[in-house]
Image (cartoon, rainbow, N blue to C red; front, side, top):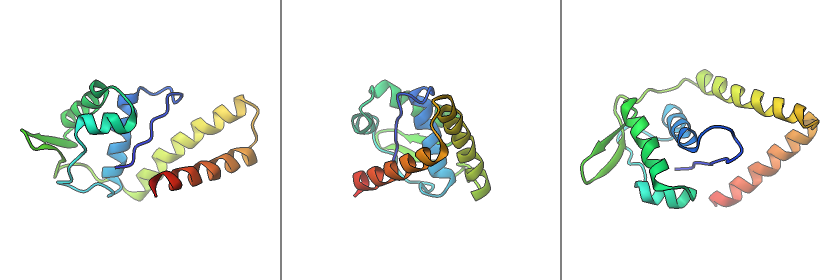
Length: 129
């Protein structure tokens, strides 16, 4: 599972985890019955407090997106909602709007933003490999 946390996002870390897991489920990257990493494992991977991951998992369970099985772990629920490609694009458009607004406030033009996006993509690809 590929989750990226931003300390500067302005969104609480547990919500970043919730939102990214929902997106991965909604886009089909995580399928029903897939097991999520253990709380401690994901916390270590993201370098966050295990309570933060536990809170995210609790929120996902309350929303019916995941289910806990005693002693075996946390799994994507069969009832987890799927997002259409259009819905995924809408969510990304909201994040892009926020990025462009911040760039404008910092007087950074679109070409510099695009160059930075491409550079960050390369870094992310190298981290996954």
